[in-house]
Length: 198
Ligand code: HEM
Image 1 (cartoon, rainbow, N blue to C red):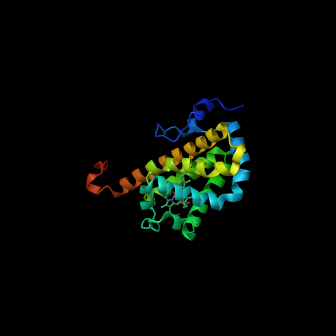
Image 2: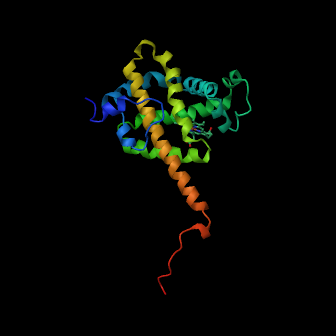
């Protein structure tokens, strides 16, 4: 099966690219089915995956740690593996992934959710350039769980889903950033309003 745009989606990777048109990045029907099947296996280990994912993110991209008030001063990443806070954070992110998987049949609802998440990340000071790192770390963390069930097609499907969600988050972040900028522009810098009553 697969939708008409699945060829585009299949080329998703985690590099920076034009992410404006999220609709063009939607996973295909086949990819959605693969993601759902593998999620049934992954979800038994969500707490573990959440921790591995973030410890690896901090190892490979230490600059991401600075965004987290609680973790920015922790030098020994091994200590983070047992941190209750990192476990809680990892679970929040994994719960979002769970919700996303559940909404793959209602992509309009997933789009609203991911846009809102991007907007909240503006307030967390977590900039879009970091979002694409998360999918790669998720894949490294779940691959050993799925063992021989892991295939190149499944990897492409998860990459597509992360690319799709993070593109929407980026859009949400940008929208919120523009909104906040608009709110803080001083009245003297705003375009003059004509007094049509004269
Ligand atoms: C696929 C990418 C990501 C997803 C799905 C994601 C998801 C989430 C979720 C679900 C929350 C809980 C709060 C809420 O719902 O608003 C959250 C909070 C947060 N995220 Fe992300 N996130 C992602 C990437 C990142 C990255 C790359 C950073 C920083 C480099 C980051 C920094 C934060 C911070 C600082 C918070 C608030 C503190 C907390 O809740 O523990 N996020 N994120």
